[in-house]
Length: 580
Image (cartoon, rainbow, N blue to C red; front, side):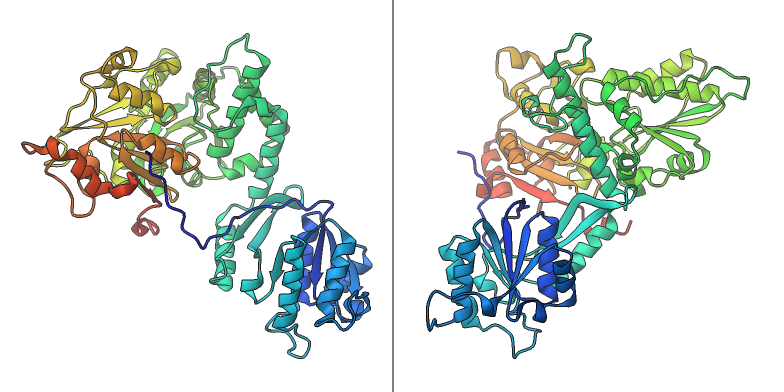
């Protein structure tokens, strides 16, 4: 039986409510009530403020909103009460009023605020009676400063603006500490907002338009960015077209820098979705001096891992940067604003078109005398198509300058705490790709106990990889050159290596699929590492796997490493990288 994480109580179920045509009742008329009212109004709800003395006691903002017809204010003292000599007239009158409204979605009590005037602050007994009435009517309740009476709490939220349009964006972020530090939640929310580009609201609006233009629908299936999709063909069906275009939108959302998403024009959107060479100019060969083409590696992702040569190419020499989609925004951010940047449109089913488009654009620009930097993640010669680009450019009269980069083959495992070689655990390593040209299957290496296997671009085809590694016979075994891997062999998936949101999933071949599924959405790009070096530096380390008789202790070794959970997921980078 698969082992899944044990729920740890104390968290909240974070939801975003649609409140259109529903009533939100706010008890109290202070500035906090005004804040709650504004949030409810932005969620398209009907807001009713109920307060002792009604409009006369309302704060300035509530009176202004009532005057504009945005909400209504009801005097609690004037509401009829069905029970004479009620224990608490306010609670009983409010209960009667809630029954008369219908479609009440939420109730917020704000006049229990500790910082309010002690003379008019609602008592705990009164708040408890209101809570009892709401629960009898199945209406969720929030009571300020009395968390034990609350069915829900408010997050510290921020709604972004679409700066280009000058209107509020549909993007919101919220932070909660589940009542353990409201001030800290506000600070964390501010830090998150400050860290995001100001254009993020416009980016959301443009992606929403892309989804509409791509004709996304439920029949197109899920939008996981890296799941395989059939190669594009001239006679594709409407369903195939919808699935392909959905993939493109998903990958644009995943890979493109936020500022670029925000600045997309309608023509740019059409170009992304049609997969044609609409971004290219029809320049003719001129008599200007010939330009240069650099093939440059950007490393695994973290900007501090750029080589000096790569940084100089991007910041001092480039007139045009043609970037692969996997190069992160943090690297593209160092490119001066006057340098044009184009992102590859090599989305599922369109890889060959996107590749040809960039190579043609490089030749076109170089013939016009420009210096072109063809920017690739990792090292351009390690599954980066550098070879075919070199031959393509050479055939057209340009000898590209190749600038090596730090390869993710080595950097990715290192950031995950995995040495690809380690005395006593791995004497060699081998690297391969998980997908061949045109999406074809590839031949994987067989099991060698003293060797680490690194598979790039294979996470999307994980189950296929596992079948090939484990098969003793049949068709999957023919896709492997060598003996089958033991099911207990350690396996790791490293996603977004070297980036702040890096995630490492550690398990064995038999459990890695369930482990990855338990972690939620994929974080492309990802790589797979297989072999005993994975656990060699964990805790006190284990460098005894190559000793005589070691295989007999493998299951016990895995048990000591992973315990009963059978997998481990590690999020984020070591804090030491934060300031580099």
